[in-house]
Length: 94
Image (tube, rainbow, N blue to C red; front, side, top):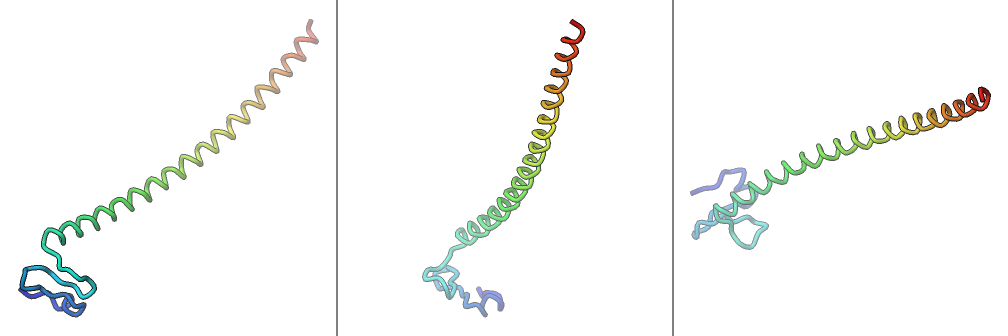
């Protein structure tokens, strides 16, 4: 079995023991190890996408929280002002 030319240019070769040897690695890889590495790369890519999405959602939620806190502060000030006005009017009418 031969490796593709592009792989052979990087020093990949099939050993007599049926393992794939790469120039940078001391030991060879069997089919299951190659499959596991490929699956792991796919998993990492998927998790990176999920992390990016979660960070975006977190940023949006933080922005919504800031806006909600601003609205709460506005309504709190309005309530205090209205209650003071109500207290003043109560004193005038009493």
